[in-house]
Amino acid sequence: MRKKIVVGNWKMNKTVAEAGELAAAVLEKLDDGIVTCEVGIAPPFPALTEVGKVVEWSDIRLVAQNCHFEDDGAYTGEVSVHMLASLGCGYVIVGHSERRQYFGETNQTVNLRLKKALDEGMQVIMCVGETLEERENGVTEKVVTEQVRQGLKDISDLGGVVLAYEPVWAIGTGRTATPEQAEEVHASIRRTISEMYGELAAGHLRIQYGGSVKPSNAAELFAKPNIDGGLIGGASLKAEDFVAIVKAAS
Ligand code: PEP
Image (cartoon, rainbow, N blue to C red; front, side):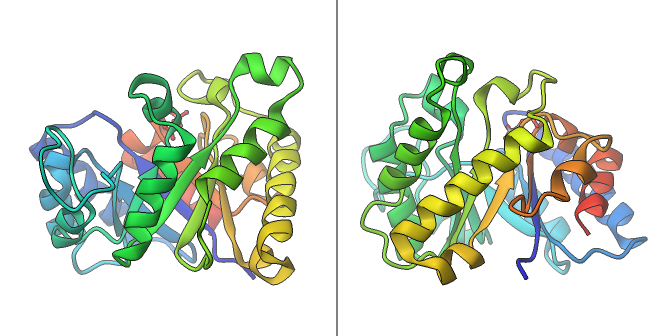
């Protein structure tokens, strides 16, 4: 049985003080319910320390939104895995579609980041997903399979890996994939993983869904057999909504 995982990706939102307040509100609301899934929060880099302090004694994981693949050096604006680890991050997101779309991220650079994070003992959430044009052209499975294969190139052990299927057309648009549409892609990803790593590894791998998940649609999505939780953008900026989604996964 795979333990579901729900992570809030706050993207480029919240000052340090606001982030601390939001994390405290999430923690407080989670405390009054039974939570059986893994929960993580990915604030922007400047707020990692503050959020880390708030969640330090809780089960909430501190998650980074990105990392670089070198240890250090002349890479202005980048942050290395060991810097993130020193702040208490246990997970890092790589390959988010916004990184691919706006910052030139490719399957190859996603693979480099993922490898570096795993080498340093950090767990990784690797995002994959097709654009609207690709879906309309009927190449969703081909695109996603390629992202999975290239992103995981030369990775022999999936122990520290979570995948997130995030159709680009559903991110921040209010348009959610139907549970059936999402399940179809999740099942195809699991087949690819089975071909690459065998059935046992495929059975253990967690695949989150992301794309306009809200309290009103979370339970239906999470009820699908191959959907193991969610990567939540917009709805994670409201403690009440995020906690409702976490509870739907519990
Ligand atoms: C995301 O950024 O990973 C995401 C899924 O965003 P939203 O929930 O806002 O669509």
